[in-house]
Length: 359
Figure 1 (cartoon, rainbow, N blue to C red):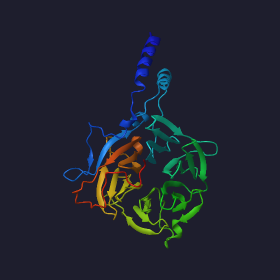
Figure 2 (figure 1 turned 90 degrees about the horizontal axis):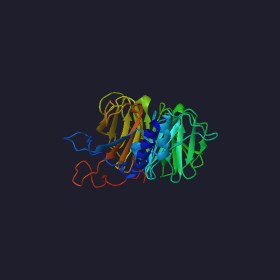
Figure 3 (figure 1 turned 135 degrees about the vertical axis):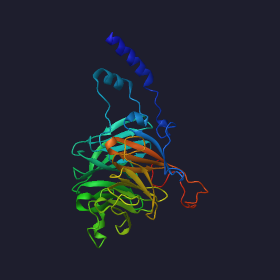
Figure 4 (figure 1 turned 180 degrees about the vertical axis):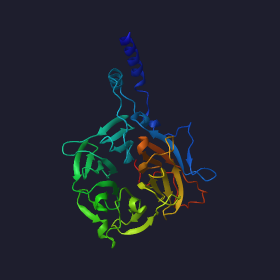
């Protein structure tokens, strides 16, 4: 009788296996309506979905994988402790230091895989993710003191830069073709070329030399400015590509415009700065001049709430936030700016992919 039940279940799985559509991945769930800021203010962001497993990204398990799990009791590899996130060309990448892997969910091909250690390129604590202008995905590892390059065309992982002191954040600057890396252990940021050769060191460009105190995450805006989170100083700092500070945002506190534990940072095509405050569990949004606009989320496990938001990335009109202790990635949509919106002029409108996002 047990064999018969297994056969019947396998038959159902065979019918279901091909029913998932990756085109549904970034569609807003009609049953949930969450927007920020709340009315009567004009909403600027809406919640789309949470990603806990590949199935949430529209990736169905293959028939034989389902069958194997049914017979053996094995479960799908789920997100353990997500940090860095990146979405590009239909692929969602999630750096997971808790599992020592980078999850790769290809929503176009409906394929899930994991980037693991290969040879001397050992992933111990993958943190930050960045794409270059070609097939390179760059991964910082804060324990291995290295930056690795994963070739998306050949699926090979190799060492890109070694002997870097606890690298965390990383971002590609297309204005000068450099990768910027936060060297947390050295209180610095370095810019390297596509051969891994150092071209810029921020401490060399600032008189204070020790301006940063264990910097973590960073982002690059369309103009090439580099934004660096400086958590022990409770600030986000904006620099020129050469490393000269332009301005700073934040001071210690729990008021709307103040910061408690800044982590991930991203900048959209309007110049708005999206910043994860991991202590208050809020993504805080500032304008291009550093003025506070509104907050997203709050502490909790429900949709639109966070428990230590850490990494953040923007691709086109979508915002991706790693919700570390909830073991998920939350996806949000940046709402278009209407023509008669008094808060934005003609040069600052949304509704098309921004210059930072993927394809």
